[in-house]
Length: 125
Image (cartoon, rainbow, N blue to C red; front, top):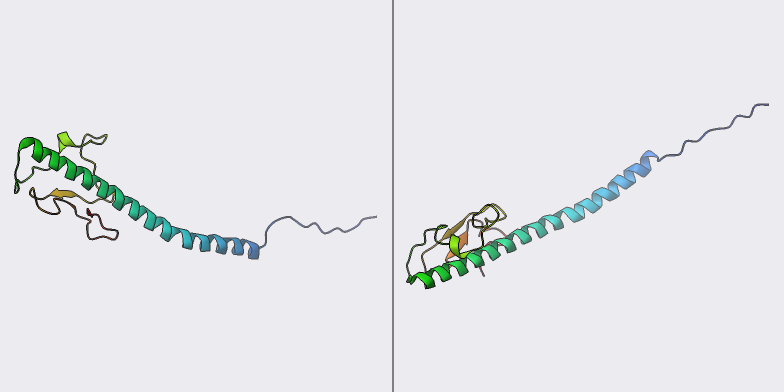
């Protein structure tokens, strides 16, 4: 005698999959802005650290060479012997893509980044 059995396949329904996708989307909507903010803050901190190193190198250069207020730096040539270079043999660049420039000796700020108007700011405090 034959019995008719209904075979039920194991799996997820469309509603269950939609709920999981909605939860993942909600978590991503919360996490992505925090990640972007943390990345921007990290880049600004690295840029400020590079500016501090440039300031120290400029002061050491001026002290060692006897330069006085108003001296115009030849950036980056004057700074290269006084700062730790990166693996490419150059002064570390701004991690956010900005460029550094040097003002005359004694000017505040002496070093600046082209991204100093961003938030968080890429400038020495």
